[in-house]
Length: 118
Image 1 (cartoon, rainbow, N blue to C red):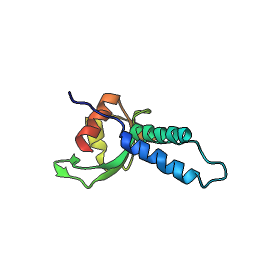
Image 2: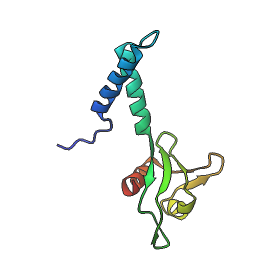
Image 3: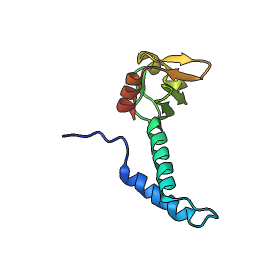
């Protein structure tokens, strides 16, 4: 059986304990439950927004330099330095939204882009 884990539970628990240790020095320390809630919220935000360098993007048959982008899976948008890869975005069926200043598309297309280039 293969599982596709979305969250790293070890990192979440480690972050919660670190925050709990730090908060004990505060005037009103946080309970461990509050620290765990905050760690989960951070993990969910990190899973929602992919921010990273996209490698191996080919334009006109040549390999481009890495491009720094943010893929927001809630708003289904790609922002960042996407101008050099605009042709690739169009080929994947993404549409430029000038109001949001972002490329928009379906969740399936954005997942496929992340899998291929991230």
